[in-house]
Image (tube, rainbow, N blue to C red; front, side, top):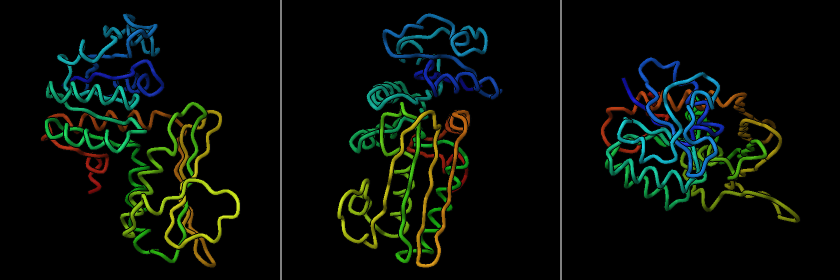
Length: 267
């Protein structure tokens, strides 16, 4: 039995991970925590998430539950995630991180800390998106510089970071496949008289509206034809199930940094 602790357990993603964990017989919910001062602290997490009492009380820190956990699942904020992985690394606990908006310095620190623990980091943990990343890599290699590449991502109005981590991952996979430096070729907005589109740029555009769970479209535009490939998430449950699958997979693995391609056997 693999014991998990869920960060941000009363939030949009954390509550679904908590609720769906009961569908995985190999996993046991051993801890649930939120930031200090949360109004639900001390209540049963099952009551909070609507699945009935679990016997697990919502705590206000990872430190109070980490000793009883094997894997910590974290979909919170960059600052909280960094605090949690520092403690997890010190305690030798595996992690699954789905937090987006991490800076380059934070990602570099995660790489260093994961030398002490097994850690899965992915901006999107759905099976469909990760299969799509594999497909995009092959498409970009074949289509090359003859096709213009644009990525459009849409999310709910409450999402704080832009572009989405998934859109950036898609762009990075494509850029690597065609030997481009994404920092040099990414274009995040267009306005005014900007001149002709350059051959190598990769456009990444953002929409924020309503309650959109997550939509990503990659467009390869050639002369006389275009190819569009789209992934639409209708429920956060697809991400939650991916995180739980990752928690089952990462437990007992050697220290190192992994992603969902590893979890799904796509490498």
